[in-house]
Length: 235
Length: 254
Ligand SMILES: [Cu+2]
Image (tube, rainbow over all chains, first blue to last red; front, side):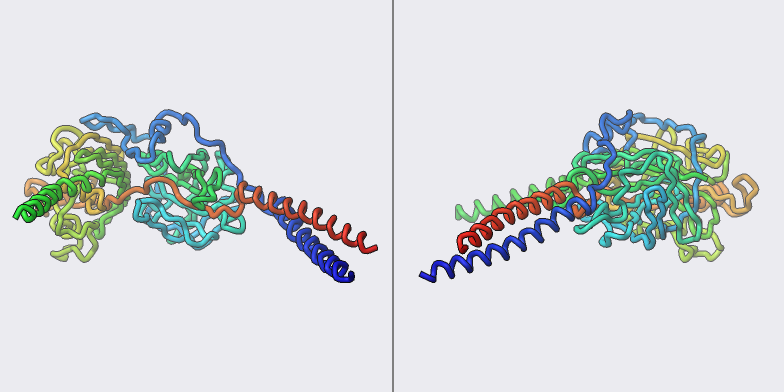
């Protein structure tokens, strides 16, 4: 007769222990979800972007060409040339309006598929070392992670960057290249506007800041969009 | 006998296919390349630029921008490639004669011969390499060049996409007197001073990145957060259930 009671007792105390564990773990998870990091800020997805950008974004493999099939040269006006600096690699990056101040910029290469590799270190920005240095003519490219597996990374707030914001890049030669943001856009990775982002800038020293955005695809372990900030060098 | 013939036929067939496969691979090398043009060693030109070459089969489209060049003088500009060259811009050690400057002969081992002449109009073959009346004269020291649909050989197209071609803009005013002159004649054309043909700025054409970047591990992403919230909430509901069970057990004992 006493067996069922004992058994009942044990079941009761196991259930009590389970209850405590469930409360602790469940509460912690809910707490982390609320108090912890929010999802990173997102600029609106690029829609029917202005003129050339729109046609260029139609396919990821779009050529960088200005698509003029002219057989003779059509020199653009040289009056729109901007300031320029001699070549020198970047060593640190500061974007005060979104709290970015990162030192020790790493060199980035292309992978086997021609895609730009991300920095190994979530807390470092990387620069495409086969392209122009920040301050030279052309689009200098700096990329950094939006987050790690556990929390925000260097470019967590890139999506909230506003037109007119200041960006400064300290270079190996001791000089500082100062840029101002022209626009911030979000593009699906499967329709990335290669020409708009990496194409020639026709006599302007420009900067591209790239990170991830949009939804996170658990099956691939990657975000589905890229956020790109476009900036140009100022004197 | 018959089997042997069949095998031979198959083997011959695949061998015949090989060139086409090869062509297919070369074709697939279409792409966008860019060069950052920097001052050539020893020649002391304070100029910079960029060039972009888009390859589609054996057709290329070119844009180029540069500033800081000798103003109002023709600047021969070319794409260079040589199978035996180093596929890079000349360095100080290429000054074979030791005269303290890099001339076109000195540049050869680094970037090879001319394969495309970036003229404004007309022929773009190596024959137009010194067609001074058809090159940009850099008003204000600046060049803004754009030319589409230049036909090249498949070897050249492939060299460009493989990062082996080099863009060179020539014309160096060594004595800073605002024009091409001097006793030393060009090793390409003795009717021109070497100043007119010495390489000024140079850059290797490299593949531009293709597509976007994978720059996130999802630690702050919305779906992940929702998952955490759902799981946590689920556990809390389960706690209510097991709590009730514990209470019932406790009541039963009384
Ligand atoms: Cu040349």
